[in-house]
Length: 451
Ligand code: BGC
Image 1 (cartoon, protein in one colour):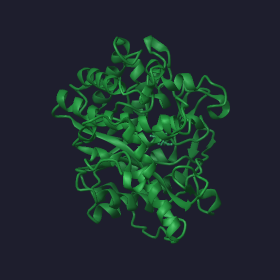
Image 2: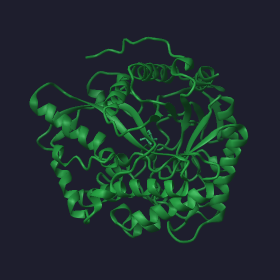
Image 3: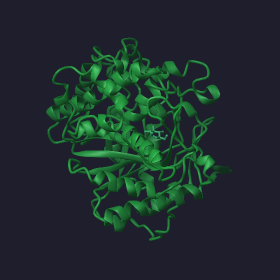
Image 4: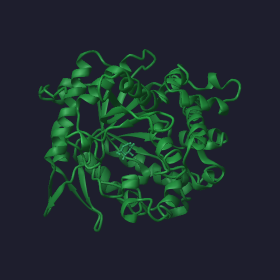
């Protein structure tokens, strides 16, 4: 197995002056205040009320209380020398029913966050959809209802008009494959739907919405930098047997190609994963021409690699993932393998698409069992993780791969979806009882790196 033997020390200077450095978050995971000031329910607000859905039966109704403590947390971003802050807009805070009436208090709140960032010299990067569909829209079928494309573009119009005079960098969606897979096929994320009859229409309507959302933003904000983000995992076959190689190709198609290729004008990758042909049932005449949009940038988000084996018993894909815990490799709290080369190989992989103009790594990071001792949290594993992943980013960049920025996931420990508060991803520790923040050694390392 390949080892991580590239030990060139990384420094900010090696990435060049134009390289963008930042930190990423998402509304549900940090804001709390789930019903404050006129906000409507999102699918996560409803999902978290159901027993057994979230580890430890916790919820995100307070989370990091960012809604009330945003100034404190943006002050910390400033103190850590982080120039760019990526956060998402909660659709149901801005439009409580997802469509129709606008909640001015929600708009005012995001205006305050944006203005505070700008006052401190921190550049805001907005994600429009990080998984929190308004519940009222889910009652009408959510992403399985084609109407969602109109609801979504209306919401985008509201945001573009409200914030576009100050926000220059926009991301239409976060990781479609994760929220459609976990939320509409496996049912382990909100809204908890399962099966192909939910997954396939959701895939198609999300894909159409990504393109329609990009177009809507461009019309209103012709000078904005507009992108969208995708999760990706480097995929390797368990062995070089033809069956394992073919299985790995199917998983790669599902995880790394399904959503990005239509956006790039290449259509759905039906040939390499036949079950996807079921999407055709939901396609209307002319849809082929509505899948693509010429994004200014693509956000890639990578945490690990996956090893794939042929599996007769796994429906639709005949492939399964060989868990990292069974492979005797270092893992994070999420059970994900620590394998920095993943990001290097993926930058090369996506570099082969000439349609991609620019790449930012809009999320990269790890959860580890951080130990707090008094008012200090030393997290050497996260520091090493970040340094080693950055070495691999630099290596790919020096070999000519497009990569123009890197955002750490994430600022503060937060609500990790169905995993609750157990995994801690932050470079700042949060005591969820008191809402006290403690900058971890990784946060101090990033501040030094960026100084
Ligand atoms: C998501 C984040 C999530 C992180 C770690 C990404 O898939 O965008 O919301 O917390 O990974 O799981």
